[in-house]
Image 1: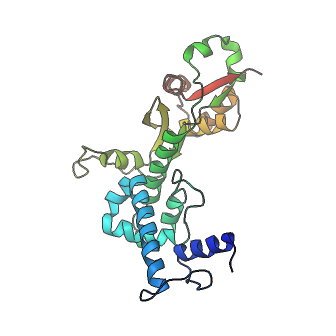
Image 2 (image 1 turned 90 degrees about the vertical axis):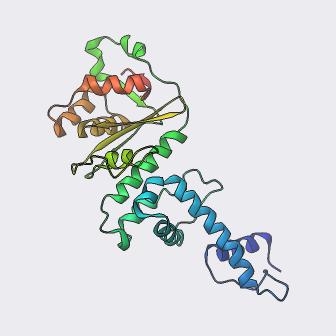
Image 3 (image 1 turned 120 degrees about the horizontal axis):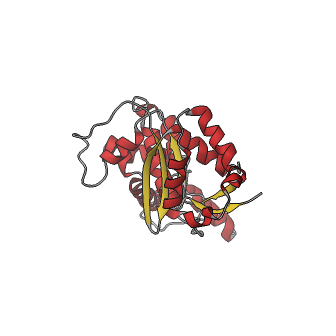
Amino acid sequence: MLSLRDFQDSFGAAVCGAPVVAQGLQAADPIPLERRVDVYRNNVHSSLIDGLAQAFPVVLQLVGEEFFRAMAREYLRNHMPDRGTLVGFGHGFPDFLDTFPPVSSLSYLSDVARLELLWLQTYHAADEIVLTPEGVSTVPPEELPEVTFAVHPSLQVLQSAYPVLSIWQAHQPGQDPETAAIGKEGESVLLFRTDLSVFVHKIEVGGVVFVDALRSGDTLGAAASAALNVQSNFDLSQILHLLLSGGGFSRLIRS
C-alpha cells in the first residue's frame, strides 16, 4: 500500500501529464482511471491557463485567445506551479516566449510579457516605509554623493530594444490599439507603487542603470556616474524627483 506522500506524488505527476500509474490510484468501472484523471487534469490546466491570461492580458490581446490558450498549455508542460499560491506564477513565461518558435516573428512579445510581470511584482511587493524628500533634505549637499539609498521593494525597471511601454499602453482598457502611435525605438520603463496604485513611467536608459546601481548597493555618486557612462545627458535631479515623489526608496544610509 502506498504511503500518503507516495500517493500524492503519483497523483500530482499524473495531473502534470505523466502516465497514470494504477498502483494506489483506483477507479470503479465503467469509467477508466485514465479518463477520470483526465477530467481533473483538464480542470487544473484550464484554471492555470486562466491565471496566465489574467497575468498577461496584453500578450493575450496581441496573439488572440485561441492561440494564447494553446501556447499556455505548451508552457505548462514544464512550468507547473511550484508553490501553494498563484502569486508569482508565470515568472518563466517571458523566457519561454523567447524560445517558442511560433512567436519568433513577434520579437517584442517576450519584453511585453516582462513588463506585465514587473507590473505584478510591483503590485504584490512588500510594504515598507517610504523615504520622503524631507528625509533627504537633512543630508548636507556635500555628503549626498556618499549616501546609499535602499530601493523600495515595489520599484522595478526594464530596458527593452522595443517600444514595450507604448505597446502596453495602447492595449490598456479604453484604448484603441489601431489608432495608437507606436514608434520603432526601444523604451525603458520604471514602475513603482503608491498606496495600492502602480505607476508606470517612460525613462531614459540612464535611469535604468542608475536604479540598478543603487539596488546593487552603490552610493548616489557612483550610481550617477554609471548612468552618465551610458547617457551623457542623464538628469540626476529629474530621476531623483521622480523616485522620491513616488516612494521609490525605503531609507538612506550614511557612510
